[in-house]
Image 1 (tube, rainbow, N blue to C red):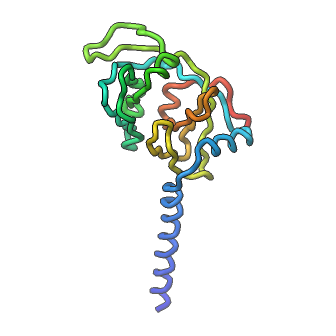
Image 2: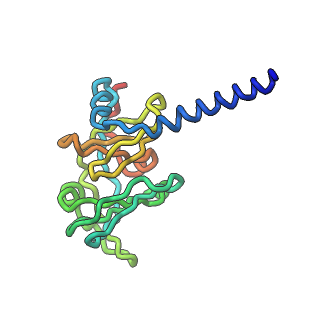
Image 3: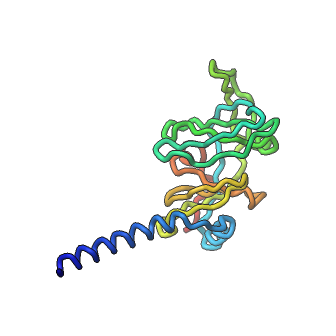
Length: 192
């Protein structure tokens, strides 16, 4: 009987630990408040997207599903509007993920073309290196979800980076850890 009780206690403990990480992963937070708290602790830095990307015009109504190699779906865009562009990162580690960039943001964030279109129709562009605040999600924070500026839920995991436009706190979103390393240059490390 004691062995059965011990086994039951072990199963309950494993279930509780599993629930802790899974339930925490499902916790939805206010990412802007989370970011401000991290900034107050000195955990923010400044980085710029500097690595060349490939771009193509979107089709009106097109929905871009951003998929990260090894993780699956990261997010899904709202339907594209006229002038929106599809940007493909050059990051083999993450599967060269694609994102939809609104026309107004695209003109502020990318310049080009800087070369000719490839046979697949993608055209190289250069990020303008808009400064972005960033924080790294800590292990202690665990995984969580939040609503991205385009209305889609995003999952953030320890090691991922949350970026925020220095001129628009509402423009706050997740970048997967390897994607950040492939596409951004850090100008100022967090002080903590």
